[in-house]
Length: 287
Image 1 (spheres, rainbow, N blue to C red):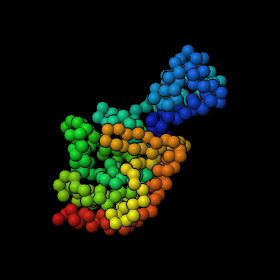
Image 2: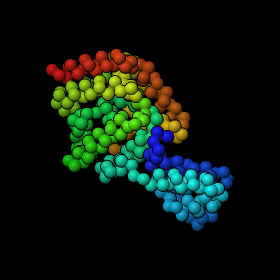
Image 3: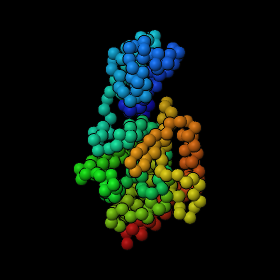
Image 4: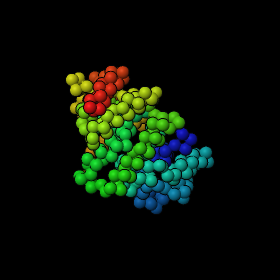
């Protein structure tokens, strides 16, 4: 894992996954395990899906039912201790959507991230002023308060520090449509600063930025998505809409998104060509 403790979100998922595998090895259904323990079937299901945090007594009861040895029990308790820790994103959970905070928890332990964005500069690459203008643009629809706007901007900047500048950052590959460089948020000076920031970020060794030019072939008609890869956990794709967000976890569909990203990337400009185009846009916004 990238860090010693890792993301509590991933640890919660790992804990649920381990408990499900132990149950299946004993040839028990969730309903059968629940009956044996005097629990509801939904409690077993929610623990395995990481929607309910088990307590130590729950782990002991499950371990006894599944005939777990001491070494495995220690591993389960280790996952439980890490899962009980707070992630940095939980400081903002009052103003951020629930699914987005789950995404932040997963992102914290991703080894690579692939992002396609056809409309705006992605959040990881936004300046403070650009981020504020993007959030303000949807404020009337999403009904975000002044303090909510401030908190979301702070969360976005905090996310950038912790993802882009952590000790062992994930490999980030971004493809954004050229239209995202020409769609104005705020004053032209905000856009000029954003273009300069993109150029600066593109020089980080673990960041690869590509632009899909407007005159290029558009190989896949899809909205924005983020594909996360992990060292010892299945890939996840994150999709965000106006009012909702959800995760794609089905392996076949995740593979489809991976292929879609490959097609989009193949039609985009390479890194050097993309920098030239971004520099041109920066000059236009400076006037």
